[in-house]
Every structure is written in C-alpha cells, then in structure tokens.
Image (tube, rainbow, N blue to C red; front, side):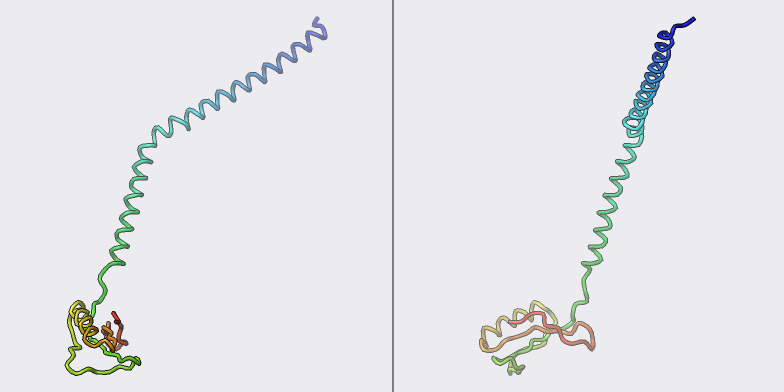
Length: 142
C-alpha cells in the first residue's frame, strides 16, 4: 500500500512533470517559430522584396518624370508682342517714331530698355494676346 506522503509526492511529481513538459513544448515551438519567421521565410523572400522595392522606386521616379514633363511642356507662346507707352500719370500715349510691334520677345525687351533710356519720363509695357479674344497680358513693365 502507498502511504499518504508517497501519494502526495507522486501527485506533485506528476504535476511538475506536466508543467515542465508544457514549458519544454512551448519553448521548442517558439524556437521553431522564431527560426521559421526570423530566418527561413525572410531568407526565401528577401531577394524578391528587394527587387519589388527597387521596382517601386523606379516606378515612382518614372511617374515623377512623366508628371514633370507634362507640367513643363511649352505653353502657347504669343506670335507677336507690342510695346505700350504710358506717361507719368499712367495714361496710355503714343510716341511718334517708336516701333511698337515685334515678333520676338527678346527684341521687344531690348527696344523697351532703349526706349526707357531715351524717354525717361515714360513707362513701357511689353504686352501680347495669348489667345484671340482675350485681354492683353503684360509680360514686362519698366
């Protein structure tokens, strides 16, 4: 017959054994999970993730370049420019002997600078119509 103390020792030993086996199983399983998701899966998929990341960066650069080219495309440039003369009070006037119609922006700007030196009491504006029927747009004013 088993004594009372031996029975208690047997029950305690079995419960400690069960706890130890459970802890060992949890540690073993967690080791496998860490090994699987910490080294094996990243080792298998890391080259693909790296290539996918590189593809995203290249696509982002391509989208940026295309959007920049669309935004930076040349706008409709005017075909002719004209110079408008203003007196000291801001009233538009006409000076005889002054060329006012040009086909090139740079030439018109050069003539405006020369006119400002020649007629210092007048102001000059470089204007043009961007589209037919719209108001004239002032490009430069001195």
